[in-house]
Amino acid sequence: MRSRYDLFINGISVPGSGEPFTTSNPATGEVLAEVARATPADVDKAVLAADAAKRGWERTKASERGRILLNLAAAIRANADTLAELETLDNGQALGQARGDIETAARYFEYYGGAADKLHGETIPLGPDYLSYTTHEPYGVVAFVLPWNAPMQQAARGLGPALATGNVAVIKPAEDTPLTTLELARLATEVGVPPGVLNVVTGFGNEAGAALTQHPLVRKIAFTGSVDTGSLIMRTASERLIPLTLELGGKSANIVFSDADLDAVARSSWTAFTVKSGQVCSAGTRLLVQSSVYDELLDRLVQRAESATLGPGIDNPDVGPLATRAQFEKVTGYLKLGIEEGARVAVGGGVPADPALRAGNFVEPTIFADVDNSMRIAQEEIFGPVLCVIRFDDEDEAIRLANDTPYGLAAGVWTSDLSRAHRVAGSLEAGQVFVNEYFAGGVETPFGGFKSSGFGREKGFEALRYYSQLKTVTVRISEPQG
Ligand code: NAI
Ligand code: MG
Image (cartoon, rainbow, N blue to C red; front, side, top):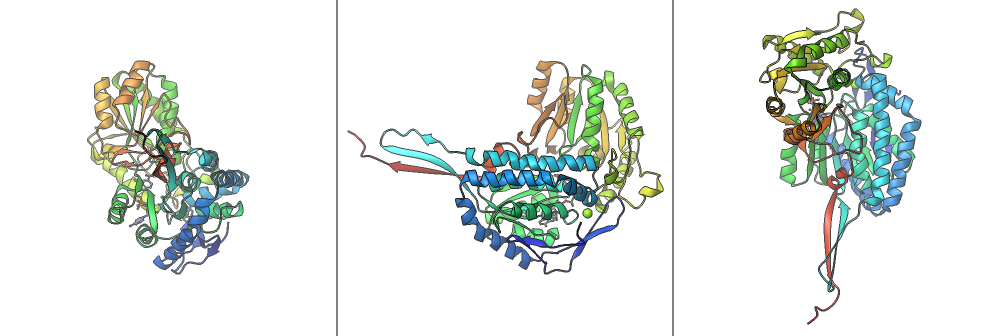
């Protein structure tokens, strides 16, 4: 790791004009490195560099763009150990999970590298006198404003389809976790992404983020983060009438019917709310359990929580620290609120007693039982290792409870009844439904929200459509007959 990180503009590292800030290790509170602070003037330089690189990249053969992205995938894999370690130190997550994210990032560039020359248009049958066809064209400069929970993976998820379709990008990573995104840009340049095609401006939301999203040369915005900031950015996009993808988190239901395989449910529903310490937009944070198996499943989850290891991500524990101090304050606030609202703490409920963990952002994995779905802990995104367990009696009640939040990102269904699985999947207000394995899917499966979870789709072939605009060309090729 370096002691100082600069902005990345036009293929090189450049200092920011603002006073540098620091990023720290959430397991210890120690400063990791100094980071350049982009001012609106720096953001302007980055957007101008991207705009200048636009024509060259757009006109590069799709197969060649794809080849460069495949090279980037290989470079990420070749550097996986150092990237994973950097991610863990900056964001806190367990090393094994960071390793998984780095591999997923490589998979995004591999998938979209392969897809680059496969997005083609159609011809429209207007008869012998006309030739009509469609083409997919890039927007130009895409602004990415990204959060701190899975920095490298989220950057790759957006950049893969954006660069494959011939767009150029400026990324504003979260101020809390900027390091791997800068390394990614450096690697991209090494493997042949031309200068200016991928730029990174590190800095703060209300300064660099605002300047980027408001920049007149930006033609599309992709945002992942909170509902409040998403709504603010949507106002900016509406003034400029530019398209926007919003990925805003959730309060996803994981529904367990009594005919489910409880061993599999216990394993998967634990991961669903503890991976990255619960800081996952699609986390399964409301476990809806049919009454007849409620006590048994709760017991198994409590046992799992009691044996969980908690510690610095670098030691690869089950649960690492929360990524930021602000998030720690938010989550511990919800732990208190849950008790005030009358939920029963089945396990956890506070910060770990181990004095070695006191300086870090650690909270115990917590399971609230006897939760009523109208409680705030069941309605609001906590973004920590906190599970609400809710009882239901029949299928209709399960669907009603699952859909009764402002969000609609993901949902899980556990049953051995095939008809019920599809019937319930069809009734859930969620952008993705996982049956008999929470988080089932991969970079190939489209992802995005219903309701307040946002709109637009990422991942899969579908994402290519959100980074390209369709053009229809219609030509009269002969005089109409007769
Ligand atoms: P945030 O939405 O404020 O931050 C996300 C990104 O937006 C960061 O890069 C930030 O610098 C930028 N940003 C902030 N204000 C901006 C502005 N005015 N203009 C342009 N960019 C701006 O999220 P925050 O405050 O860090 O987290 C709060 C809550 O949001 C979390 O507790 C969690 O519930 C939710 N969240 C959801 C995520 C998801 O994956 N959907 C990711 C991160 C947070
Ligand atoms: Mg950090």
